[in-house]
Image 1 (cartoon, rainbow, N blue to C red):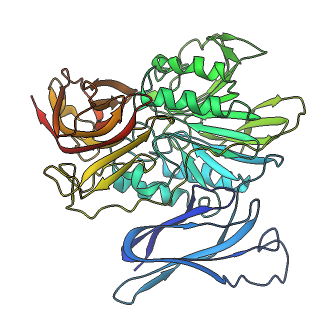
Image 2: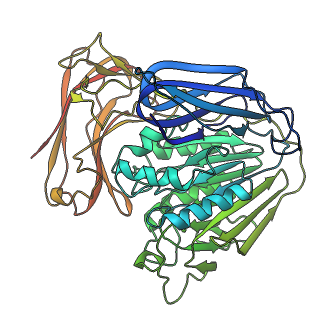
Image 3: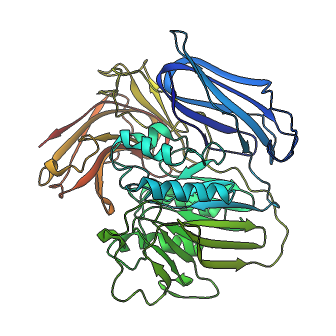
Length: 535
């Protein structure tokens, strides 16, 4: 038995962290760890070796392992190692590594950013190794970790093998991540996972998903507005998503500019994107125009590991008038953040610094930030073959944010388990999703021109507002379209709802079933007997 990926760090907080790894056989999960009394075990000659006196374990057999360590000390270094044992008696033990819990509001830190790390593994490995050499505290990626298929995530973990045992990874979903389940299977981001936020030092990070509906009125839009309003007093505010609103090549996605007014209203400082496999920095923008006082700086960082000879790396003959610098080069960004200063460095894959930006703010007292998105343990997935809400659990599973959803075997219509929703009305509504019309991670060329119907049965109890079911789809350029049922409320019996798509465009990357509710809804509802058929 072997450890085939990891260990790698996820979802770090001031008092907790998730440690994940993969084995080639089902096995148990064990993490041994200890608090460091020094800066690092290589800081002094003649150092004592770690003894790893503390232990967390999960005896459930699995191949993708996730252990949540809690009760940790903020801004503290820890040493750790992982191990797994199979029923046959074979075992695997990792080498030791270390992590640091989240810094406080008055402490400086740094993070690395890049996107589009697929295609050229050697370049991705160079960028990841450089991020490790710069000792970034965390990495916040801008999407496209793997080329469509789950199996290709092996390349991602091979390239980051020297980085992720020491540096927690957060990231947005790219269009190449959306057709497969790897993003949900291998990563343990905060709820609801496909978009989320977290705090580090004096900064608030908001991670969006431009493959899902982000238009005004959508769940993501309202969630974003709530998040930015809640953290508008954060010293620094950073937003990440995959598809760039501004870019000097054909990968520019102007539709995402509908998000910019929210960024401007709540004082976002920097927006990081990718998708275009170039480097580009824009002058501060507000309303699409240069504004040195209140503008937002937009970065495109799509050079994580792409072949720069291909067309997505070609620049227009004339750049955007508000572009500060654009280069088709492999690179990563290193952002250092102190309470009163933020500095971004663009570094190519050979280690050469080629662009810098420094932002400063007047010194002011800092107050502790409220909690960001819930950081829950890795989900306890149902076994293959379980029928949840009418669909058999195989490779594609329901993603059920546990802040509002759960599986229910007591109240069902035809399935082994229904999906129960509970809303309090005072929090943003988040959807539950399930990828459908899948084609082994490839673009769904076979659905072009076809129409599909979604049928579901819904039962409500004391629901104020309304429950909805939808089908939505995305492609290379992100979110494309969505059809949504009429809202349903006041039905104590199972009630059938149905919705049909228009003719789907060519090269759809992903279709998904979306279970949701109107904004401000409260009560309890169940979904079951869900199916998708061609019209």
